[in-house]
Length: 164
Image (cartoon, rainbow, N blue to C red; front, side):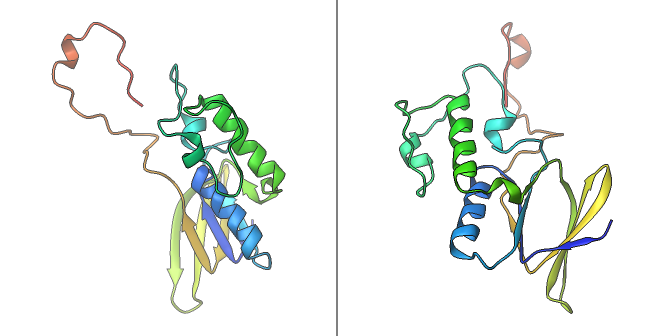
């Protein structure tokens, strides 16, 4: 497969990646961009975690986008309302065509000679992207090997142990 060229490649389609896409489309309309997401859906943390009762730990008026008001009545909101909000923000601003899902970034390297980044992803086959600007909006979770701290006495606990 050939190389796809963009002005900007954004890695990660959670809240910060969606916001980056919005700002690129609004304030840099002449720049081409793509958002690469490893998972099959947008939303980052809000798509990843499925434990019972997941909700925001911040009020949504502060946590939400400055460019799209939070209009739900709930302030500390459950996952489904947050995902609805994110999807509505994406669709209202026609951002979805810029998203490429199931794109696992394998490497990113910068060439001083060409002043461009080369990003290799995998989705069954390797895909290569090149760009002038590369933005990582990936959060801090290691999906395959999440950090689990040592909880003293955990072995004695008889209840269900949940840790994202």
